[in-house]
Length: 71
Image 1 (cartoon, helix red, strand yellow):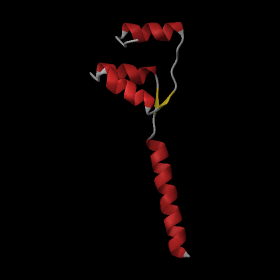
Image 2 (image 1 turned 60 degrees about the vertical axis):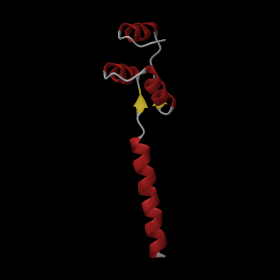
Image 3 (image 1 turned 135 degrees about the vertical axis):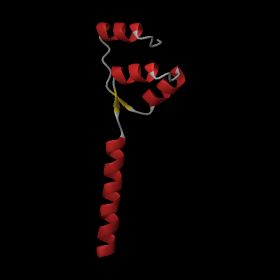
């Protein structure tokens, strides 16, 4: 019984650890990746594999364009 409880707790810790590692990308995240020199392909792959919370207001899109983010 103790062993089963131990395995269950280890599983919960593993799941919790993985959940905390998942970041939410923002407009600033994309700008940071671009400024670090990542290619559009890498940035797009990261966007597709991450949780995202983007601001798509006209002003925010203008900032992205000014920072050299491609369409």
